[in-house]
Length: 405
Image 1 (cartoon, rainbow, N blue to C red):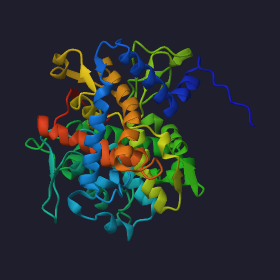
Image 2 (image 1 turned 90 degrees about the vertical axis):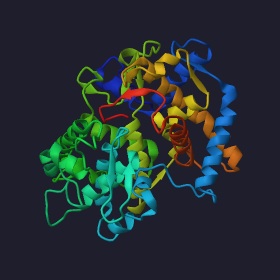
Image 3 (image 1 turned 45 degrees about the vertical axis):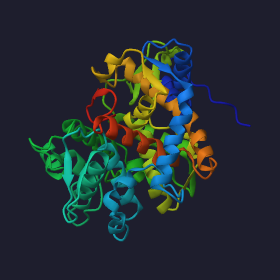
Image 4 (image 1 turned 135 degrees about the vertical axis):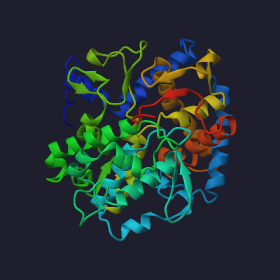
């Protein structure tokens, strides 16, 4: 057996590497959940007696949407199917695996909270789509139109040159944004695509001479890969695109935030990692990688996604309760300890909810990994509750820059 590689957790690079793993996400989320269960949280109480009813709701929603229990993966590709339209068929005939990964990466990076006022009127179908479905379909058509390609003769691609030249007005036009149809975080979305272009241009070994995100296919290589390996490739190759708030020294941490109750060795002390958008991207790459002949295994190495639909499900079913109900009315940001802890508790409780849901559906983890429980599932149930209770708004008022929520 090979000796374990020691990581220097007192160095920025070593500490950052340690935090870029779902093992770190689960371990630290578990500590905060254990603390909340012991009545040590300033923000939340945990009510385990509500887990069964939450699982029953998720199982009911899953059966309603998928009576045969053939649940697909939780993925950006579900949004491309909005309104029952098979948009994928339009691309599969003219796009290779690299192009499909190009589309997935850009679309996921554009997928953050749209806000309550924005919607997209799809040309041709007449569908009026909002939130994640609207963002997905808008990004699909932007890709198909060649917005992210610098080669007019090859529109079905994303490359560094086109991303570098993308303007806020171009994205606004593609997403039908104006004063009467505002999109939250439009500037943040353009900025993250600019950073994507810079990263892909700077790393031709992974992304090729034209800086295409689809280079991830060759970077992973082989006929199979573990989910953790795919996530690691995503985290390490795309790390510089994340906004600069969370860093250890010169190392960008991405979706990783401070919590005063977390200890930890060396420079990892006090940090709660999530990597939500990177994990959402990894989930969304499962199908394109499969179409490219690469099977992704060990899917449950990925965590549940700590976002406002899954976290909202836990608050709206009473599994989590705010100590101070006034916190539901005030504006909070992703850096606030309240939000960091909410997301951490969400990770742990989704792991606990999943086997309860499977038991009610009569399936095992092989038939329904977490990627399917989320889709069936917790995300759909959280959205349904939000729609019924608050017209679709999350239970906390989150100020978003369009890069995390």
